[in-house]
Amino acid sequence: MLKVTPDPPDNNACPNPSAHIMATPHKPSTLFTINPDIDTETLLAHACESLASASVMANDLAGFLDGTHRNTLLGIAQVIMLGELAVNRALDQIDPPG
Image (cartoon, rainbow, N blue to C red; front, side, top):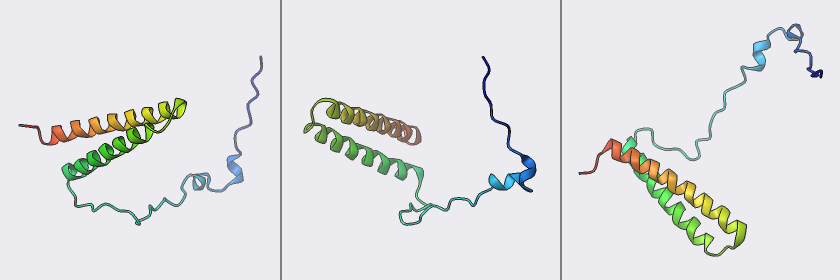
């Protein structure tokens, strides 16, 4: 069986082939920024609180749904919980309890 493969691009068609790769870098919006001076422990603590809130919201909303929509939202809630557990573990490694 023959596999049809296209011809490679003609490198002579463009005087600078790497110009296609070197696009203008993406400049992120500064509308929502986080102070770069905030320490890692504080960032993780806020992330943990945000994930805990998202978990509560997802589980509360799942109570109003039935069938596959409920299952989907409960799956999302579980992913949020796993993220919260990972952040908590990172906090424990930065500042061990006890």
